Amino acid sequence: MSSAKFVYEGKEIDLPVITGSMGEVGVDISKLRSSTGAITMDLGYGNTGSCQSEIAFIDGEKGVLLYRGYPIEEMVGASFLDISYMLIYGQLPSQDQLTKFRKDLDRHQLIPENMKKILEGYPNTAHPMAILSSMVSSLSAYHPDTPEEVENNIVRLMAKLPTICAFSYKQSVGQPHIYPRSDLTFAGNFLHMMFATPCEPYQVDPVLEEALNMLLILHADHEQNCSTSTVRMVGSSGANLFASIAAGVCALWGPLHGGANQEVIEMLEMIQDDGANYQKYVDMAKDKKSGFRLFGFGHRVYKNFDPRARILKVQADKVLERLGINDPLLEIAQALEEVALKDSYFVERSLYPNVDFYSGIIYRAMGIPTNMFTVMFALGRLPGWIAQWRELHNESSKRICRPRQIYTGEPKRAFVPLDQR
Image (cartoon, rainbow, N blue to C red):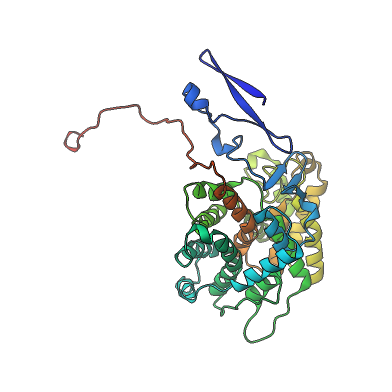
């Protein structure tokens, strides 16, 4: 095993170097503090590896995303349940395994009736992510937290989350809940629970079903992002699956993470309200002094084109053509897309439309309200969160996550009693 040398105050220590299966390199500093008394400082953990994982791999410079070694481009024609099984259990399922997985999910789609009373207690103005996080956490009160039930709880959560998501939407619009149907696909069933009503038949549009299935797959995992790291950190304390996933939902809620596609639509609304003059905002984005940036362009990890965005661009065009939508916001989005793909300022800086840009456009076209966008993200990310939690849970050498800090407060001083202040 190769090593790196660390020199501090005249003392030299060897730090092991770990090489991943795709050639990425990490310096193991786990013994640094005990050997030198020093720690590393890495704001936002952008250069810190918190775990070794077999689930997902990203090469931001080359625009590569792999799920357990499979390129994202080769998986989009599969079913979401096929990819979910592979992420959670580590291998592509056989037909028999996939059939059993589907039947197990079908059996657990309903939520306990008492939970519906909890759901109905929320006001119509409640944000769906607030409802989602609390309802997921509440599942731990209904299902035992024992070693024997871990695998069953994984199936229960995969099965019940679409129902919870759709019920929270129906709650917000004052419509009756639509129960799940086992004869539909995962994506088709969700669309039915979202948009069907008791007073008329609802037919799932195959183009929208395909688009949603693809969106869920593209969001299924993305390595150690904020919400995934949160799931693993909470899980490292020994917290159960439901509590850990609920924490991930809360982390995803933030506008810098799962709320990005919602910000895309809000940006388009702002441009529309300003006379639809998109060129004005393009010029502002180029001007560093303006303080304005276009949401949905460029990516923190991908320094080239987001591979998921390449796939979604085709799907977005297909959805818009199928629905024939005349939406001024989508027209602005298409104009911005054309600028970003051709303007040298954007091309030279790799500020291409990312997955949040296209997913926001598709969700809006499908009729999914803006405040549900992050819920849709959570629905897709669920199998990745579960896989990450399960991987941590099964590690024999796991330890609780406990980052260090550099204290910058007052030095030690004497406490002053109240009557002397």
